[in-house]
Length: 268
Image (cartoon, rainbow, N blue to C red; front, side):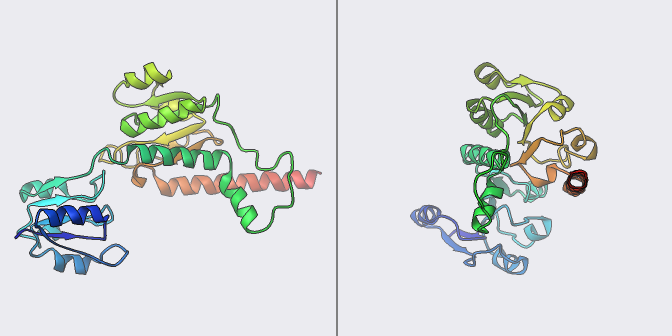
């Protein structure tokens, strides 16, 4: 009988399918990523592995599972799997494409609005019981209507985000290696150069795949082109942005703002 190991507890519907097909399976029952030492023991005699994105399925692990024929990644992305080595081992690698397009687009806009309308700050003020009453200039934020919304990567998710941004009245521009006629014709989106997108956008939404060409795609030089007032949301892989430089950049902005406020207070 075929043996399957699942690296974490997943929705019950998956277990029902496995049972229906009379497949013997086991899964890691703790609600946390499986330790590598336990994973190495569990995969020794499995015919198929169902890992999560949090599990690194590298060559060292594959060498410990001689019977494995399939790695069915429980994710849209599969950068956690050494696909080239899997090919050499004649192991089929699969993913779950296009199942999170609408959800990711929803959450992208949720993050944009949270930043633009300063929802997190407002929520913290209320929870910490520091709200003293309404003020005309309190937490004004910015509107999306009429602002330039830059989409970096106009694939399935980028296109779904453009639908939502258009509904808020934003002006959509995008950068991609291919023209996206659907969003151009349907939502008046305009394809621009990367530098134009970074310089002109009030909102930037990142939807690039992670590969050797996009690792740290938003590096020091490109991040420096972005407006200081822009809102950058990345719902793709974190490694697309040089996060160490981004942190330094944000700290400098914070320090500059604090110095400006100090000067203003002394001048009053």
